[in-house]
Length: 90
View 1 (cartoon, rainbow, N blue to C red):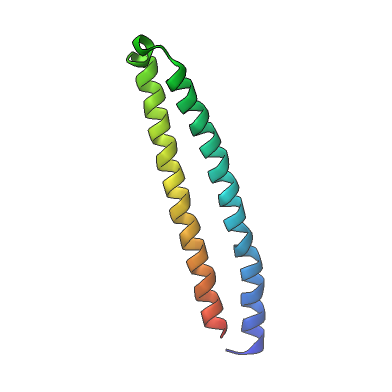
View 2 (cartoon, rainbow, N blue to C red):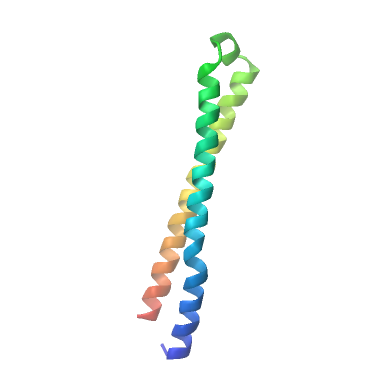
């Protein structure tokens, strides 16, 4: 690979690398909200926890856990993309 293409790839890497940090922040924010919802559910009396409100809280927790998993997969893909670009530059 010539010098000009390596330079272009370095610029691209400078744009890709911060994406991982953004994903980590998003993941953290969602984890905090999931934990808050979990605490809300745990604090409910059992009669309410088994009602539609409790079911909605459980569904929200599950959806947030799914979102966290998806962000983790994206983060892994970003790391792999960086590694592949670095490999191409070698």
